[in-house]
Length: 213
Image (cartoon, rainbow, N blue to C red):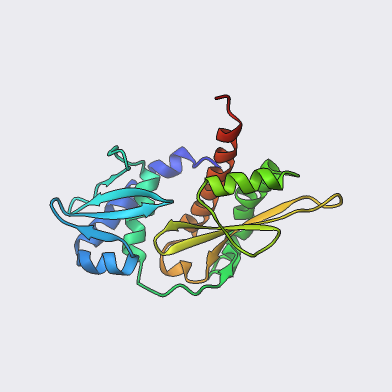
């Protein structure tokens, strides 16, 4: 699901508030709680976002892509609020749906509609293609469902993409699950968009594979 433009534009005050709150914190503590690197000369956070190294300058807190370009409002909000919310809680090593997180049941149906359901339709009857695309997008195999892969969206936010084949009688299905600790690291709304983003990445990886050389 492509993010709503009005919503991403409305994130500006939220981004500014996150910056103000972060500047009142010790950067070394922020780095420790979130599992990111804080380096000097010039001072910056280095943060892996779906395997790509982004930087957040200190103290102005501008967020840059791996190529140095300034990020979108959505990526700024993802990364700045991750630094702000992260409290260093250990991973639970237990997978749950979005509805299994605190207050997540309200968002579950809509989230499933623009994440797992989209991916299941894209790969209907093609588990081998899904496997190739999921691995190409950086997934590590898990023993869940008929196919499953683990991704590290942010240093302390792992995601699990799980797929079930419906066979001849039922439609295929898929879900993006979260570690039970995820609410210690981001808002539900942003966690939902991370799950949607993962599905988009896997679908895009399949499209790259079939593109003319």
